[in-house]
Length: 98
Picture 1 (cartoon, rainbow, N blue to C red):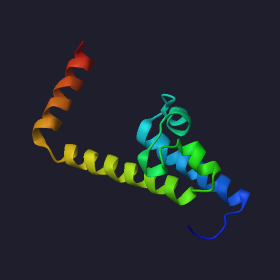
Picture 2: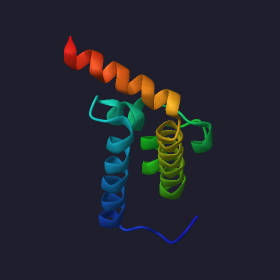
Picture 3: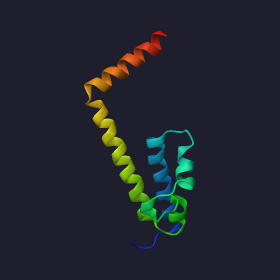
């Protein structure tokens, strides 16, 4: 799929992916689960770790970037939804006054 990647570059790219994953999934441990337990059709029914170790870095990166883009698009849709934002404000106010 592209040019060979040095081990140092592969580690740098994996660290960048981890940062994106943390932004998407927060710090609930979902990042570790995502890398090691979730299988994806786009990765040939492998976990991201299996695909990464097999050298399929671009496939794993595309999967993360697609997920990140979908997450950003969903957040934007919610920010532009007056009903949703009103519901969030109401719940926030209820929590502060409880």
